[in-house]
Length: 288
Image 1 (cartoon, rainbow, N blue to C red):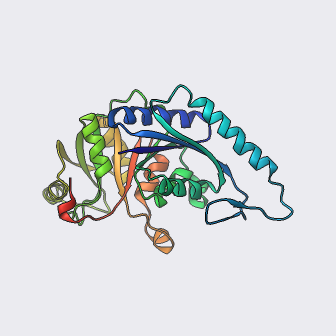
Image 2: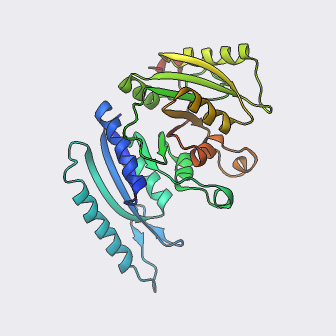
Image 3: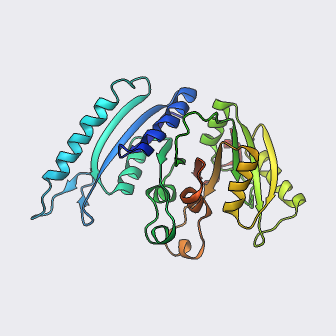
């Protein structure tokens, strides 16, 4: 892992993200990038280089002023953080679009961001920024809702239904974090009334996943609850898990309407840090 991105709005949540990102950087040798995005007008268009196209009759001075002030604030903030921070940047863009573009342009390996989550009509209509980033990001995203800078990061719980687990997936960032903090990996299958497996079958699939992905320091759990979200929250509280790991298929369009994304819902609702990763199948020989 070389680069960690922290999207910031200079809020307390962004400070929380920096706290845990710095802890990860210290353990892995990664460098931090901090990004501030001035929200662009809804109808804004951009050049191929990412520059804002000015629309006649629209006043842009306030946007440029905010961008420049934010850049100055970022530079000042980073003056005593040279050991961790590689780059700060301020730009004008649509928030989710700007973050995803920055991830791709700067070869980011991990995003760490604070989120207030989303519930009720807000979740249904627009969701949270974090939810949208999880859906679109080509790299893992670690979200948190409170200060976790003092967290030990020694117990991670990897939640899945563990279907189709004979092929390895890209867990490179997850495994690097596990090695960096010498953490235990707890595989968890939540049994619900709508999705039930015998303990024998669930354990078989979890062991298949662990073998296919060459996982180390693995523990296996089957936990029963009314739904997956409650199961994750209750299991984590019962066992003292530090953060939750979940894969996402990043469904879009109609598939999202008919198949609820559990990982996005967990990001919105769970108070623990949640590390989501895009599910990409690897060739078996590529597992490390």
